[in-house]
Image (cartoon, rainbow over all chains, first blue to last red):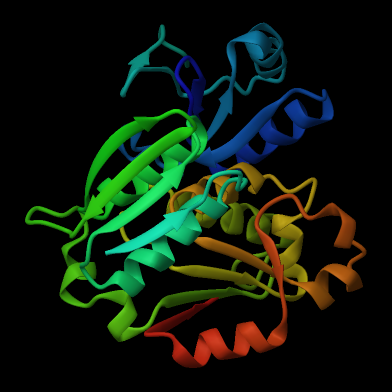
Amino acid sequence: MIKDGDFIAIFNSIHRVMEAERLLKDQGLKILLIPAPRTLAADCGLAIRYAEDVRPEVEAVLSEAGLLPRDLYRKVGDNFEKIGEKQ
Amino acid sequence: MSKLDVRGMACPLPVVQVKRALEAAQGEELHVLLDDGAPRENVKRFAQGRGYQVQEEKLEDGFAFTITGAGAGAATPAREAAPAAAAGPTVMLIGTDRMGDGAEELGRLLMKNFIITLLDLNELPDRIFFVNSGVLLAAEGSEVVEALEELGNRGVEVLSCGICLDFYKKKEHLAAGGVTNMFTIAESMLKARSVVRL
């Protein structure tokens, strides 16, 4: 479900992640709400997956709505690399 | 020694055929002819994931696999202890596009999560039947089509009830797995080792 290079945004609340999904879908962005990978345990266990090509748009929409994820990771090989520090 | 030719078959049929043949072979060696690319990769991963050894040989037209009995250290020892052929398959019946009662939006999200989570498990059902609004999960527009295709590649038979597809006007829009009928659904459930109903 998560390909090499995909971004995984982890949220700290079910309501925030559902709101983020709705906003991103309304914009026609290709994202998918998925269970957070077990290694990246999240409070609500949910994450939004997106690919590099839509990353700027996805993050702009989330930022504008005040819905930045708690953590952002990128799949690299078999691992997840944490990207920056999001609030 | 059994032989099987799955060349020319579209995914996930090669895995499904190999799975059935391995169950029927009951530990005997199985020879399979298959196309390079996805069928080769999927069948290899499926067989090795279940603890079988796979020897490959390149042919002019595709590949030949010799699959030998599940050895020690298999990924799914439970399966070895109780071979599916002897104990019956595990069947999952999904009769709704939502999980649990309560908020509709949450129910849809939970169902989607459940199906995607199956991909992280070693022990998978042998068959998943979608009935009633469950068939919407296997139809175009569903967000779990990708996950269902991947389950198919891992040997899970994904089947939707034909009447239900017809009712929801999705007959021409099935996006993952195949179509089945009530006879197969009823028979599989009665022969199953366990039925997981959602």
